[in-house]
Image (cartoon, rainbow, N blue to C red; front, side, top):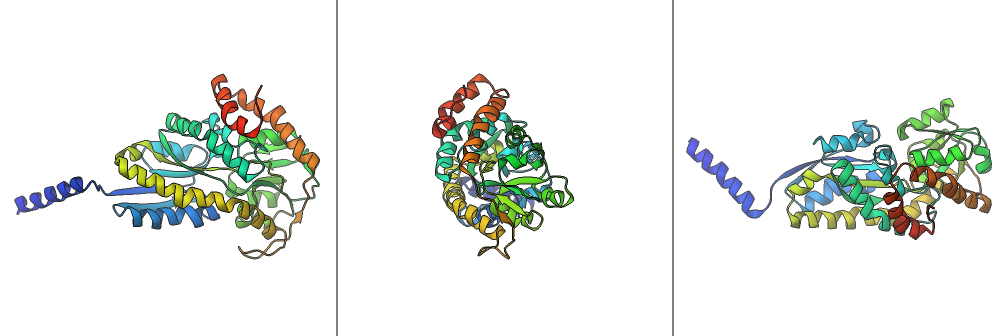
Amino acid sequence: MKKVAMFTLCSGLLLTVASGAIAKDLRVVGSWNSLTMFKNFEQPFWTETVPAAMPDVTVEMTSLGQVNLNGPAVLRQMDMGVFDVVHTVADYVVADSPVLAGLDMPALAPEIEQARTVVDAYRPIVAETLARDFNAKLLAIAPYPAQVIFCKGAVAGLDDLKGKKIRASGWTTSEFVTALGATGVTMSFSEVPQSLQRGVVDCAITGSLSGYSAGWGEVADHIYPLPVGGWDYVITSMSMKTWESFSESEQQQLQTLITAELEEPAWQVTAEETIAGVDCLTGKQCGHGEPNDLTLVPVSDNDLQRAQQVLVDNVLPAWAAKVSPADVAQWNETAGKQAGIQIK
C-alpha cells in the first residue's frame, strides 16, 4: 500500500514538473478596497483574470486597510515572505526609499498625458530601486485621479492655505504645503474623514474620486482642484523570490496580463475619474452614488504658476538633499527632461 501511495505521489510530481506547471498560491495585498483602483482593476485581475489564464495559480486577496500596515512595512513583510504581491502608493514608502519620490512630485505633471511620459521615463529607476531596497520585482505603475485639495472651511486659493493643518500622503506634498506656510500632517488615508470632522486637520489632499468614495465629501465643504499632490501612483510589485519561482514563459505571461488588463485600463480611466470625482463632490450628475454639495473653487493661472515655482524652489531641492548626486542626475535625464524641469 505504501509503495502504491509513494508511486502515485512521485508520478504526480513528475507530471507536474514535466508539464512545467507548479501550483502556486499567491497572497496578494491590494490597495484601498473602497476605491475604484481596487474594485475595478486589482481585485478582478487577481481573482478572475489570473486564475482563468494561469489555472495553476490560486490567489488569496486582501487590501491595505485590512492588513493595517503603515508606510513601507507592507513591502518589508513581502520581503519576509508574508505576502507575494503588494499594491501600495509610492508616497507611502518614500521615507525608507527616497529615490521613489522622484516619480511623483507636486505640480510636476498636471496633465495626464505628460504624467504618463514622466512615469515611462522614470520606470527603470523605480524598478531598480524596488529591487535594491525591497527585493521586489516591479509589475505595474498606475495613477489615482489627480490629487486635489479638500478643506473644511472656506478657501479661495493657495494663499488661504497659510496657517492651516493639511493632510499630505507623502513628504514631498508635505514639503509643498509647508512652503505655502501651512503645516503638513502625515496620516493614513482612512483616518482623514474623522480628522477633518474633529478639526485635527483643516484640509487634506487626495484624488477627487478617491475622496468622494471614501466619504471625504461628507465632512469637507470646499474643493480646490489644483493637482498639488501629483497622481499618487500605485506601485504593484512581487517578491523577487516569488517572481523567480515562475518559469520564464510564466513571467512573460503574467507581465503581459498585468500590463494589458490592469495597468493600461487604469491609465485610460484616470482623466475621466478626475472629472467624475469633482462632479460627484459638487452636486453634479454622479454615476458613483449620491452627489455631495461642496463648493468648487476655480483654479487661477497665478496659482498654477506659483505651484510649479514652489516645486522648483522648495520641493526639488529638499528631495535632492535626501538622495545622491547620481540620483539627481538620473532624475534630470528622465522625469525632469520629460517635464521640462532640471534640478540645478
